[in-house]
Image 1 (tube, helix red, strand yellow):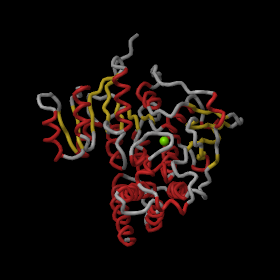
Image 2 (cartoon, rainbow, N blue to C red):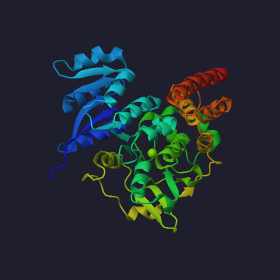
Image 3 (cartoon, rainbow, N blue to C red):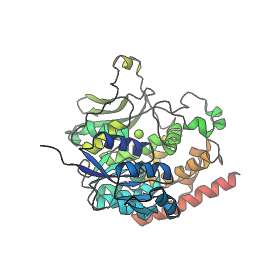
Image 4 (cartoon, protein in one colour):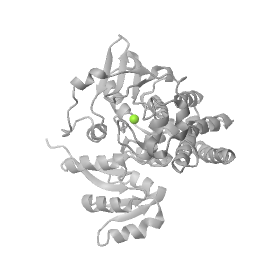
Length: 389
Ligand code: MG
């Protein structure tokens, strides 16, 4: 039997995950049809994508950009939406079966929730949504696989490794981290790091926010929190391994001592394709993993004591409530400030630590409490940057 064509909307279509998602859609037109696209400010690319895939609806980051986008799409029948309203409306679009959510940062939470509440499959690349509203999202979903599939490579790997396993069989989950571009640099030399150096990642080609997060290792901290919610695993059973070669994406340790690993070339099309075709697999045409190359693989357990960003993430997770949201927002603002050359690189993690320290209340993470924590954390981050200047 021929499989039914799945209708997908890609929110964050001009970013690295979005572009790779569309490459897969283009390769498998008998499996995937694009019905919606959303981007922030890259109108030229969004317009090209809209002409190629002919979605019924597209959205852009800001209503002020609509006229410019419309003029690029003159004569095309396409509805143009904008802002958060546009994202949420695409996320619950009755025409779409699956939503690929690849926007960057905290703006992902509301469309993620909207998609799950509308009964969509959600292919989730936006980790901030889970970090900020993990409980809410898991409650709104019908469970992993049924309505929520992670795209983050380590979590896709764990999702695949955990298939068919019973919770009682599982001892520990290992997430690997490349260690970023500064793994071997002395902490003192890092104050001179420029955004350009920090944006260069040794293994993965990624967007700006996640590249900086990889350089500080906050990315792995956010991923520990993400894994906690996705796989309902206690923090002490979630471990991070520094693995600079980036060929082993995750490991699963079972109670009899067996360790299962997920290996592959570092190419996001593998986890994206799995999220689009689950439980089936698509025949991707990618270079094979070279097994002889694996002889130099190394693994080093990343002690949270040695890596301040990891320590902060574990402590925000232990505190629970809105603390992970505060961590995520403070980090998002700190990264923006670094990219705008307003603070030095080592200040990113220091800023997050200060904001977490300053937080005196910690309500349960309902949608309003998260919004309030977000506003508070933004203000606090700015106030600290201001005092530093
Ligand atoms: Mg990842």
